Image (cartoon, rainbow, N blue to C red; front, side):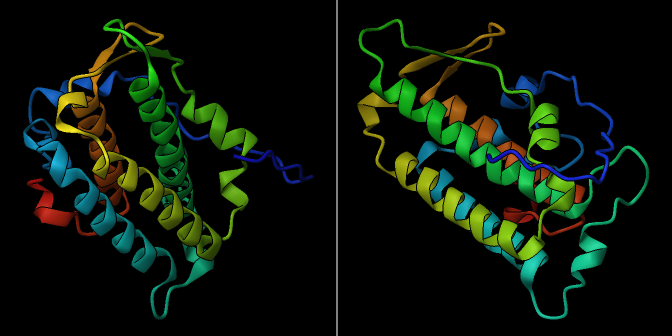
Length: 198
């Protein structure tokens, strides 16, 4: 998540201030994903499928990279900005998962809330090249998927607390993470692995 400097002014998209933890309890009416029903063991393969779809969206045959960097309307991220966000989501959740798995005792780990809009500004998602984002997203997805795949059954209930008070286990952290990745495929009009019924 490097900081980019440029003379081109940054234009913020509309901030997302919603608490999305409700997707752990019921299907998402927008993307159709039922994250709360996904077994932890299924998450690595679903992340891999999503990463392959993102690669196709960003770097498939005949892709118009300039179009991918254009916002569909004011206040809404471009496809490239959504993908850069997903890349960084993978990195953030990889860090969170590592903290939870390494925390001693039953109390679990605490991790900071992440300001995705500040990350978009400091990282200048709007200026990124879709092909580079595709490669970085795939690599970040593979790393965190490998970490999920290595979770022992007895560690699936290990706990983490986000600084805003939201509590997770390894399993619910994985489900929350997965929904974010799949939901943004829906946002850019791409097919959602499992038809949105993950």
